[in-house]
Amino acid sequence: MSIKVRFAPSPTGLLHVGNVRIATLNYLFAKHFGGSFVLRIDDTDRERSTLESENQIIDDLKWLGLHWNEFYKQSNRMDQYNSAMEYLKSIGRVYPCYETKDELSLKKRIQSSKGIPPVYDRASLRLTESEIAKLEAKGVQKYWRFKLNDQSVVEWSDLVHGTISIPLNSISDPILIKPDGSYVYTFASVVDDINIGITHIIRGDDHITNTAAQIDIFRAISEKNPEFAHVPLLSAFDGQEVSKRTSSSLSMVNLRSMGIEPQAILNLLATLGTSSNANYNDTLDDLISKFSFKKMSLSSPKFNVDDVKQLSKKIVANKSFKDVESYIKPLDIGDKSELFWNTIKGNITTVNDISFWAEVFFNPLKVCCEEKDYVRQMLDILTVDISYDEWLQQLKTTTGRKGKDLFHPIRVALTGRDKGPELKKIFELLGYQAIKARLENNLR
Image 1 (tube, rainbow, N blue to C red):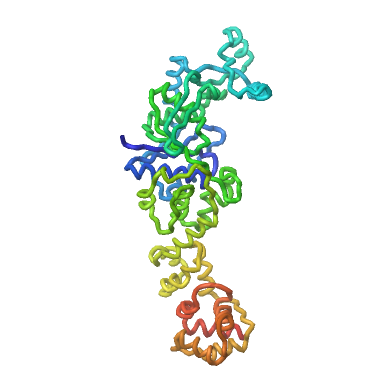
Image 2: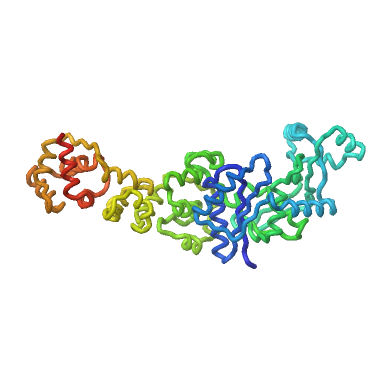
């Protein structure tokens, strides 16, 4: 069997790390077994779906390197949903309902007050033709439910949780068509998964109850269903729900604008909640070869932005000049470009920091070292052909300084910063003329 999985985001907002973790796990699983990764845009929600969100999802996935083998949009597949719905009607597995939202809410409150599980009571199935005619004459909009096989217990072997059993009489008949005539995800997704040939569904464990109902729908339409893997939901390090923070630093748009490396995101998300550690130098191929659900814990993993920043920093520090040349070339610093990169790369978190250090080293800088006498000594000892080591040794001998008292004023005088790249590298990057000018500037 050739494995085929799908990532099916709704284009109603930004992709966040929770969505991308599901996409990553699907991708790694499929590629580990030589299978296919499908991107399906679940845009059945007419009111909330936008083309802008769809385009951003596609752009984010390309940026991450999660390329798909097949692409679908649910809004283009209505004929298939209509056909499947007509089949379910013909075999008596769907039925129209007429309760309003308020009526359904009242039923649930009454059931809860009596200690009864809030399962839909199938009252609409008991309506007479006359009662239905009166409701429709009043303009009451009907919606459609799938009639679960409530005498059955759905059981499956989950790739993460092991054996899961759910009695179908413990859940309500799922709504398949809303009063406005639009299809619900529960139904459209099943039809797509059957017709596209999805073999495995990997998603959050908040869908476990939905899965029981969907398996019954799968079996009603095709007599078989895909395999499932329900992974623990991701939570933020500060305890907030990831899904509630799509406009925060946890969205791909914001992580990207911060300059976070896409591989840092993938490496962290692929290993969170598993027995593996995230390594900065793992490639996508490495992640694919190492993937296994057997390594996954059942507890909810926590995503910490600081962790992905640290991974990103290590990835950036190990980039070659060729890897970042496109960022440095517009700075117009000529033959010092590669030396500049080798000087700063250990002191930046993201490639966004490149322009900051270019400003420090190649633009006029208002530096201010208050130790004027020491700066004069630096300038007196400086010569055109002196090396950094020679210059530093003479400063030690002449001033008697050592440690922080020796080094810190030099750094401030040359960069205006308290921290930064190694001083020897700065000395070589700036060269005699720039160092002389900066030291003189501190004496004005």
